[in-house]
Length: 603
Image (cartoon, rainbow, N blue to C red; front, top):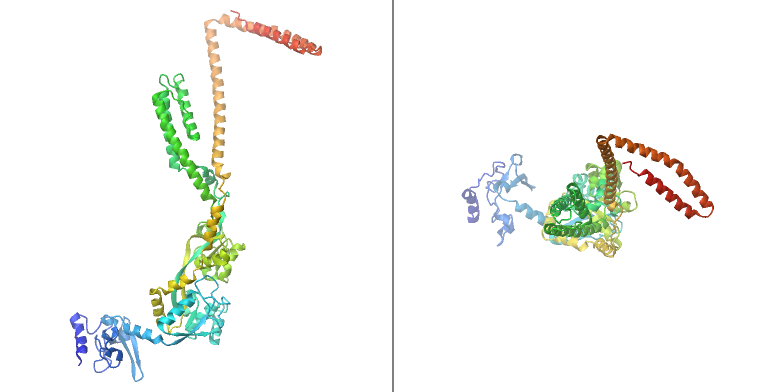
């Protein structure tokens, strides 16, 4: 026995690995002579594999494995098929090794092989494959795009060739007509790879359940599916009435407004207290009226952002300086913040912020049929989903008014906005992605392992990202938006932006009218009560004088009755004679005599 093989047979016991394999998959005897019996490096210096006899043998030559019974094995195992012996199953895993032998065979098995491929033109985006007739099989042309570049990288690294087919075999078309007569060319190619007539579908496809059930896939990437809507200005009356009223007050937070009121009232109270002392502004004012004036000046200062007091005391002047300082800061901050809000309001944005907003408003949403199911799962009503058969017509449907919003892949939006130096720039992405789609390439089962390994190698080497970078479209819409913002006129404050102050001012004016009328009624009743009290006091002091006064007033009124008509007649005659001014002077003199007569005190 060769020393290397003897060492390999002794290693399991030395390393503590059971020679019989794992309990989940015990080793069995299949061949005589000990080959494959128990966990050992059976292929070291094995003449059946010349590469293991070389100076630099592959790594799997020294790995341990054994034959197993597949029906009694729960771990990975493979089969050896010989024309002269029944199938035998072996496993590296049960001995604690990765199966590098199969991996090496997989990569070697595809080298030099020719794989059949159907190239199909994708109908949207920029990451797929594109030819003259998008959505159809590319005839006598392979197309262009990231998918094409990735396939070229895989053929070079793995050493296989591609043979282009110009149509799907008849058997595949007949099967398609039975199971899915309305399916697309992409579905047809998926059935072709699943049935083994085609090895690769040269295009990018959403890995839908019906497709992954029909054929193996190589995963290329995940693509966000986003909600897209038209841009509109924020100058309208959008939002509820309460939000409209509060627009002019947004520059300061509710907490800051409250703090400003508290500070203004507190400092005004201090000023009023100081000014009540000797030599102060309110020294001669009654106590209640002084604090009423102070309260008025506090709110007036806050509204005008200017101190309304005229303090005469040292303390009042110092506190007034502090109040003036805080008011200057408030008006500066309010002005700057209001300007920022106006700029933000002038920017374009969508009518909704996410899919839930669109559902709440009952908006129509266009989507490709591969994305429509996801909308229904997210709660969009079926009557609000407008299904499009081609990805290339989803965004135009929004511009043409067929629907309010659209759900598309991110690459579709990027490709559409890159057309003609910035088409569809009036559309914007809304919120977070609605979902993500797995994008892949359909392949045949025969070559799926080898192609998966080739794809994984291409990703690790950065070839997939390089392919995407080579075809990534330019972002024209950002430049268009920046130019529009730079050349736009300064925003103006709209009516709805000042609706809050207008309503508040009207409410304050109405409140002032109500208070004024109420105070007038109170003063009238107060004067009436005062008059009654004075009269009562006079009656108590001298009832006879009171009676005489009332009698004199009555006599005076009776005496005045015949005098007034005579004066009126004299005035009319004087007017007719052209002596109107003289007549008016005489009337005034007579009226003065009557008033003097009425005002004579009987005492």
